[in-house]
Image (cartoon, rainbow, N blue to C red):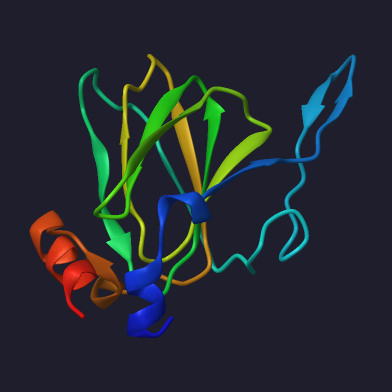
Length: 144
């Protein structure tokens, strides 16, 4: 994304996506295919687990990378911010994911015991793609 698009990124650009689910007596399956169920091709997958109570994860925004977060097990909240507005989403079903576009700050919190946060991303890891300091992020968003 170019700088102007990043500065215009807003929390209303985040979207809760209902993923397909196939349920049978033997269990359920949720398939996710590149650019079909989600608005990007998947380049990286990771998951968070064994998260102690009261811990906040994330606390960053991306410059290029899109993310989809799914509560594969348990439940947690995602607080998103664009520097002007904030919103909290509750993920508690493995067939819903929150798409977070570049330029939106996100923190994961309120993890239930045994939660697993599955994260699908549009880019491989690159430290230079991150804003990790909220003050620096706000400064960038407010520059004209």
